[in-house]
Amino acid sequence: MKGCLERMCFAITCELYEKKGNKGNKQMKWEENVRKVVPYVPGEQPQKKDIIKLNTNECPYPPSPMVQKAMQEMDYQDLRLYPEFPEKTPLTAHLAEYYHVKEEQIFIGVGSDDVLSMAFLTFFNSDRPVFFPDITYSFYDVWADIYRIPYEVKPLDADFCIRKEDYMGECGGIIFPNPNAPTGVLMGVEDIEDIVKAHSDVVVIIDEAYIDFGGTTCLPLLESYDNLLVVRTFSKSRAMAGSRIGYAIGNEKLIRYLNDAKYSVNSYTMNRPALRLGAESVKDDAYFKEICGKIIRTRERSEKELAALGFTFPKSYGNFIFASHKKVRAKEIFEKLKERDIYVRHWNKARIDDYLRITIGTDEEMDALFAALRSIV
Ligand code: PMP
Image 1 (cartoon, protein in one colour):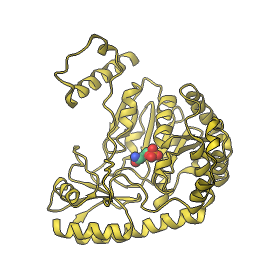
Image 2 (spheres, rainbow, N blue to C red):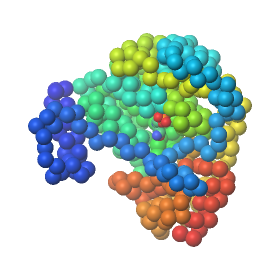
Image 3 (cartoon, rainbow, N blue to C red):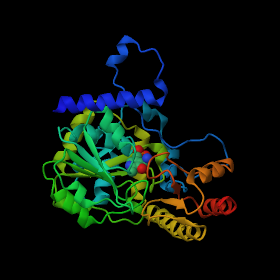
Image 4 (cartoon, rainbow, N blue to C red):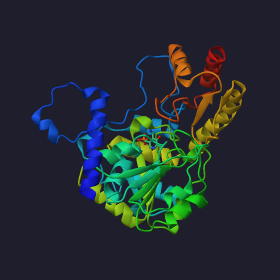
């Protein structure tokens, strides 16, 4: 059964791979044995200066001043040595203290992408399919493909909500972001608990990349359920996308399994500066809360402005708004904004091709966006 599913996944991947522009290339004999995958496509990172960048959900504010100070005080000679073992570092110690858990319950990685990828590899090892939504973080199916994990996507309802009932059947694991991305729609902790409770035989991963922007975390469920893994990132609410820090919190046993897999691939994934700077960020809770508060306030104001301009969108709990215009096509708006050096995100994908995901920037950046939108729509 497993081999059969793997072959099916592989055949689909090869077909997609060829569709993506590799057709017509002469196939070398050795290519039959290549692990082919259609890669994840990250948002554009334009090198131009003076653009308004609202396309990859970065934070518009700088990291904590304590991070800046620590960076200035760093000794370059420290780079001579390997970093600490990843399960016991200044960063894991501060995160454990912050969340009132044991250090053994924290796993860190190079951005939450690294953490999630390791979690797919470690926990999704069944013949049964892993469940995740049809509209969600578009890296999930890529990890499933590269690790040959069978999966089944569950359609969101017409309001872009995850239907809890869809996740109650037998499966090889479950993963979704809460709030979901790119929709921003939040699921209540009680519903998450029902899903986790119904699946004590597999691991349920909740990707809380955007939880700090007004959502309620499911971290308290860790006390009752040992099959829950919560994944977080420093890229959004901690304004440190460039340092690539992500982490997971879970039961000690889950974390040990994750570390076993990590040590079997690359023991020292995180670099010394990131470990130190991440710890400084965690220490400065006042600054963290201040910037999250500012982003939430700007999001609330932006919702009013966008509604007045004729956009509709689900209520967002992220640092972005997923909006569609009643009259003008999203693709047209996307291109016209780009001509004005304002970058937002658009996907040519069924169900969401008439939506734009707009990251919340500073108030000034959002004002420039609204002015541009006024002339476009
Ligand atoms: N999860 C979700 C839902 C995301 O949108 C992102 C950002 N692209 C990530 C995880 C990964 O973020 P990072 O690797 O920067 O921590």
